[in-house]
Image: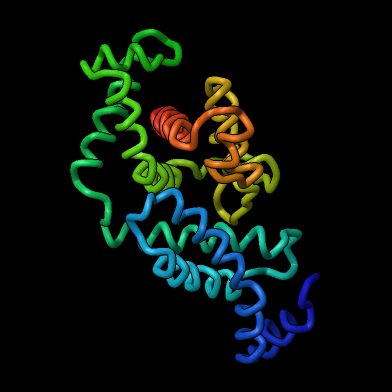
Amino acid sequence: MEHKGLWKDYKEKKDPKAREKLIEHHVDIVKIVAGRLSIQYGGHVEYDDLVSYGIFGLIDAIEKFDLEKEVKFRTYAQIRVRGAVIDQLRNLDWIPRSIRQKAKKLERAYQELEEKHKRHATEEEICQHMEISKAELQDLLTQINSFNLVSLEEKLEEGTTFDLPKKEEEVPENIYIEGETYEILRNRIEGLPEREKQVISLYYYEELTYKEIGEIIGISESRVSQIHSKAIIRLKNQLD
């Protein structure tokens, strides 16, 4: 295990210096997570603020990490760091009320149409249902992207603790965390339209940015953001 001596000193002796060095050695995890979330939130939140929120998650991960578990610390820490940032943003209630209202309206449109037709709703059907143009829909999908991430986290906390086998592999961001399972979410991802599944896979499994994903599949960065928003809306509705 990486930095085994430091871990032993901290876990067995509670050496504060060992704890400080563990934080220093793993602060890059915070920077990576903060960087990705900074892109997602479209400039609504300062990168330095995200890093400071994430540091608390890193400290929490170091404190709670079980050396006996067959889980890499970096893997475990990512969810703790990301969770700490999401929790802080939720507490700050930084998302404008107008964006929340638009997101809820769009979610209802997808839910109503997909329940009615028993299949995935198309953008054309959503536009007709909401009486908006395709350009207005795409703009809306871009606007609500960051809200959807926070909202999906809340949905997972509310309703995804099931009596199912826990897995470390094949879950978004390859995260395994005690008391939770993403098995249901993984199955829902498999049922997404192909392009949406591709974007989710590249973003969470391969940890690529929107720009990188766009270059791979030949679409713009903003279009990747819109597809990601649609996928998250479908996943949230299915979790409901």
